[in-house]
Length: 91
Image (cartoon, rainbow, N blue to C red; front, side, top):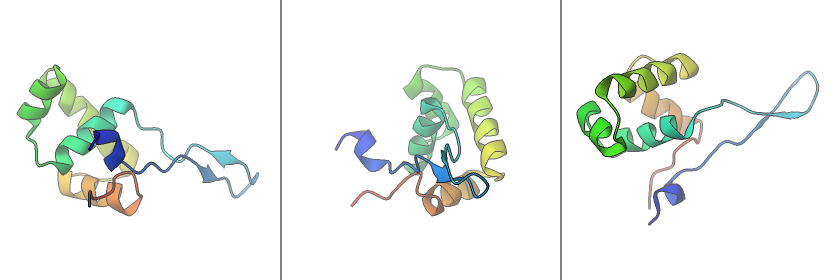
């Protein structure tokens, strides 16, 4: 299964004020890759190796994810991603 098949994106939301479709939460592809890696129980070290970046870069992406989602832990981040259909469990 291609990893993109496992993601279920929330592409847009409807603005209650103007009734137009707007981006619900802009996450970068790298942030989505990190979410997927967390879903697969990867460590920060392993994620850095897998994505060919430094551990500090992974930490920066995680900080951005925490800020964007209002969470403060890996578990909270994954819970948020599942509740908001940013990721879906594979069958």
